Length: 238
Image (cartoon, rainbow, N blue to C red):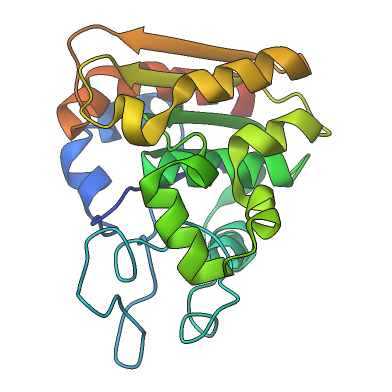
């Protein structure tokens, strides 16, 4: 039985982007990791979407929360899906161990961080590329949280990694890679907020600013092997 790395993708993505663009399969096979990459939102007839078809909300933009607002509350429960429903299915049908890691990019980086921080003991490793580190205080997050969770900002805190890290019961080491030429760096991603929160909490965080890299899958492909090794070291004690 082999450990599982759950990969959460970003805005506009499906379950296919990582598998097609990241080039992770060779190293994952070498390290003995199974990768599971779910979709970024519910899909299908009857699933609510943004009224204007915006890229940053609704289909392809579930933000890995459990929505409480209509018409999204019925289907948009991506947090429960990632943390509970999907692993239950995987563990019932595939030769996997009880060791789990979680990682992601952008919106998915946010998802990976909150899933790990909210569930001590459930994951043995976590990493992120260009995560939305402080969604309460950026346009992407403010839009999604207000429509999924309502206007009461106090409810947003339980879905923000920079808040959760302050009270995390488990000091699971976090690896974050961020390109310094990322167009979304200052306005949306705000890794410095996560870094400051981690430092204040004494939480182990390695934030690597990668010169010349943007927000694309070329960036992910360049460093995915190092992230897979990070996970394998924890999941397989390599």
